[in-house]
Length: 227
Image: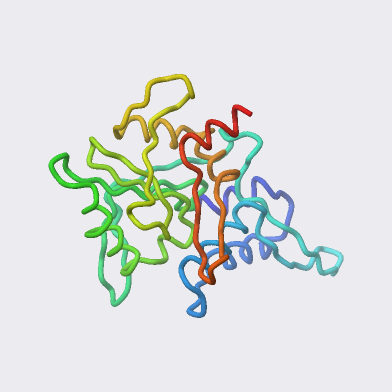
């Protein structure tokens, strides 16, 4: 619902078939690619636009990229966080992630929370990896994964090993670093920072034959923007 609404808002006066095709292309599944490859392909569509072909009112076939997000005015996007969302996965198994963050109807953020007395690594080993296996479609368009037990908090990508999840301690370069859930939420989920991080600080590397997704670290994000 939200995706179709924004597709029409950002790409006005197109035939209904153009919007429906964009929706179908973005949400289609494939069994021939890895989750990382699917995520890379979807990311390109979300960042650069979804390319569709449609016939205009003069009978001419038109190719156009449909804009999904407004990167000029971040406030013009619809942000929605859902807690305890039930999702049906493989073999009709159900899973309930703690928090899923949507932008214009696209699930971009996944947050797994643990109690303060639980080791943070358990959020990765016991929950996140299980979700990747049982409800992989949730991660087709995922941008960021956040793990937290309220004391420790880390951000990573869907391909990252636990040791490659990183803390987000600072909002600005000159402030004292703080490791907690509030700081990482403020640091990456404030609307302008979230969309900036999504648009400009994600890379995919296939140098070694498999797709690896890289997200800038806290100091890289601050340093590049300051420069």
